[in-house]
Image (tube, rainbow, N blue to C red; front, side):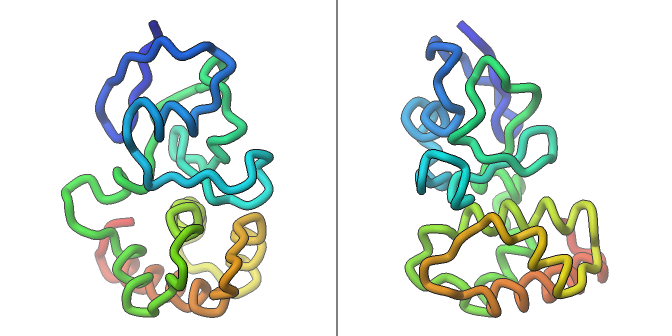
Length: 156
């Protein structure tokens, strides 16, 4: 058995050590906000945070897990939407919505390290997260909006 902490809660799993974190999150813990996209860390749909760092959960085997995991379900632990999620809604970013949890988790990582990113900073940070619907300009606008909200006293 292995203990992992996800969204502030400890869980036990007996999954094999080579099991990708993605499958434990979805299949064992029922946290289906994290999506399976490509399985090779090329699309970003499975992005979660491990110790605050954005990672592709499809490529993190349990044996290599190095810290606490935060999924889209845990981004705003007080059951309210995080400023980033609110900005996503205001800018109507989601079309099909499939990639959005990964997009938001990647954007949260960006804003944690760069609270006032330029368009170039956003493009560089978000480049590994693909959106088949092509909502990149809305994503950029929502990130700028969230950065302003966070700067005015909102939390990530």
